[in-house]
Length: 206
Image (cartoon, rainbow, N blue to C red; front, side, top):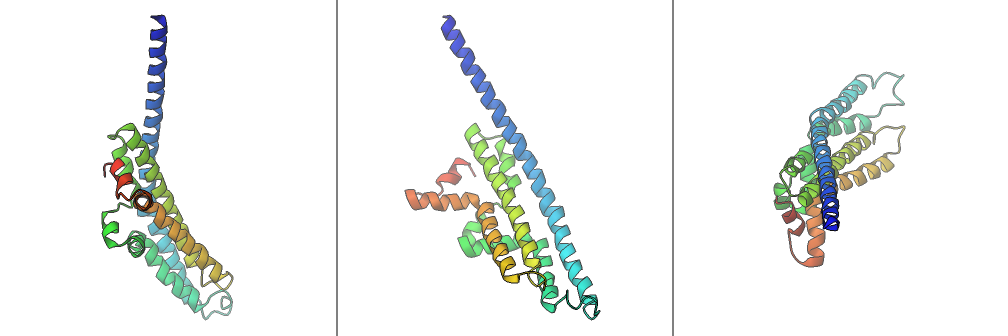
């Protein structure tokens, strides 16, 4: 009898510990959702405005001999395009993802970490953990997308290697798209091995 009580105590302790870990992950997921909201609503807009403002500033001083070696029409034109694209990065990413995965898939996709982490608190432990992981990967994807846009904005700078910056920006943008669309990337991979679509998504009850 004492052995049974001891076993029950161990099982209860393990269950309580697992519950605490899941709760920690859910709280972490909620923070990720807040971080992404700040990233999209504040940082992306701010970076996009700064890129556009720097293009306008350089345009006004292009004829100044002091800056002629540092400013080119290509650098100004590049930033004039990349600045607004950074502000509207959500639409830009969806368009880019649509070219890779197809428009019907993108229409169903959620590129917001908050859409995943919000559902974690009401999901079963396994789904909650998956939701937080996917939410974190989506957040990392958006950070990679921001780094890609910053790399693109520097391509026309005569002091920089434009080709290397383009390669770096393109690689980051592809990686960002895959991370932001991680749910559907995994569906494609699982389907290629199992022949059944939606196996990963169905576990998230989305």
